Length: 43
Image (cartoon, rainbow, N blue to C red; front, top):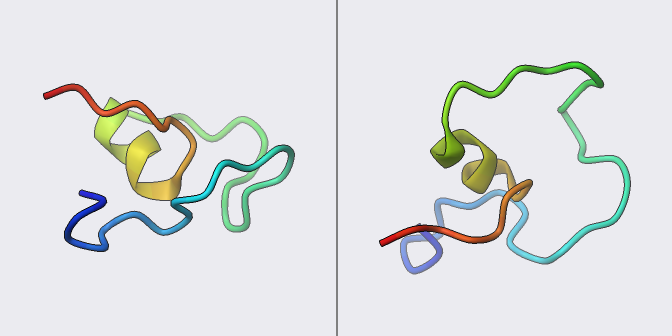
């Protein structure tokens, strides 16, 4: 995903992620990777 520029916020962040409200429920690890919340992608 990183190679194809599909990650919105590729840099590591601490704190608020724009567009993600407190309590938002992610349904897959891929969703978390796409917004930059979970940086480790399994092959």
